[in-house]
Image (tube, rainbow, N blue to C red; front, side):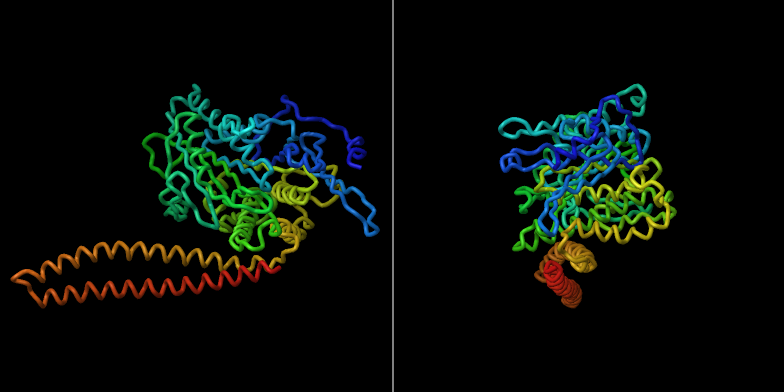
Amino acid sequence: MIREFQSTIEFRPLTDDQPVDCLPITVCVRKRPLSKKEKARKDIDVICVPNPETLFVHEPKAKVDLTKYLENQKYRFDYVFDETCSNEAVYNYSAKPLVQSVFDGGMATCFAYGQTGSGKTHTMAGTFTGRTGQQNCKNGIYALAAKDMFDLLHSPQYVDYHFIVTASFYEIYSGKVFDLMADKLKLRVLEDGKKQVQLVGLKEIEVTSVEEVLAVISAGNSVRTSGQTTANANSSRSHAIFSLTLRVPNSPPSDIWGKFSFIDLAGSERGADTSAMDQRTRSESSDINKSLLALKECIRALHVPARGRKTRLPFRGSTLTMVLRDSFMGEKSRTCMIAMIAPGMSSCEHTLNTLRYANRVKELVVIDPSANPGGPTPNGEQANEDELENDSALLQALNDNEMSVEAFNHHATITELQQKEEEVVDNHQRVHEFIEKFIQESRKLLNLANTVYCDQLAYAKACKNLFSTLTENASMMSGLLSEFETMLIQEEMASQAAHQY
């Protein structure tokens, strides 16, 4: 049935001479070839790419009487890459146009999204070759973008600017930020006086060549958080953000000329694909999907004025969107999403979920006039009325078709828990510093008590004040820890209740 349908389609593959546009939002889809495991189990390719903007998903279904039929779902994006396209071709039409915007003083962001095993790391970090599966990092988007940035840096147009390029690499895991270049040091996300989000203590390394950039990426990937799911034995369980920042010499650390951020998002999965016995893994999956939903809303809000809605960016929806706030601000910001899909029939549901997500990001910008002739426009009332219904469907597709929305009701509890954890850690740090000073003062008083001319009254008052302060700190920490322990128990109970759906 698939071959019969494909015989009626006119195929027009992507060519190198096709014009490339630098759009504020670019959404691409890349289809990977069937893997060796998929071929071994005789999995069927259910994805076809007739032209550089369209793809079909041939979803096998059965009627009530068990009669088999084929549902051919059509999707349209800015660019669609089939399994024959190389990393270089994907880069040329997706991330390459964004490099110039960085030198123009803008913020460029490139996302890699998709289920685990769909080819995100292959595209972003480089292809795997040979029997040992060694990765060739030189043909990944990281390296290709870095090469173009250094070429522009030394070009006659920009050589007199004497730009400095710095690299940073961190991950977001369960709402917390960890620096991959500083032994996974936990970072605090704060706003400064200019209402700009800052990662306190983030390590930035000055780089002068592509080789140094790849060394940073290799070191960061080696310590990135991963875990096992039924979908992938080595699944990335965190969002990894690698940034190349242009700075003017002798400028304050907070002042930047432009920045290119590369985000390798955690693999999107349904709740059914995580182990039912591992509550931590299921909590990870829930947190990942909520952050992806918040990310979609921020990207869509970039074109809010064209839709006649309020202009506020909902960047506070997750830690991921908070740290990427500067990437969404300003007229010069450019965003590219590369959605990775697997072609096998066994991954059909995952593929459809990925395409729905990507379609919701771009559907109000890329319009196919032939898809709905004479129908309501994106700015019409119909689009606004259907938005909540579509978002509910997306939320369901992101986490599990069998899970109810009640599974996410404990999100507020998790947010409060994270805030309480930061409060406990901050106060623990202050108490620890006090104890260090306490030991020094206590030693001085003890030495004073052993002298011949000790003022016993002064000694007693000083000791009383010192130990009174110690008692107050101990009592404060005990109360905070009791509250934190209670919230942990409540969150665990809420999480278990949510996962029952």
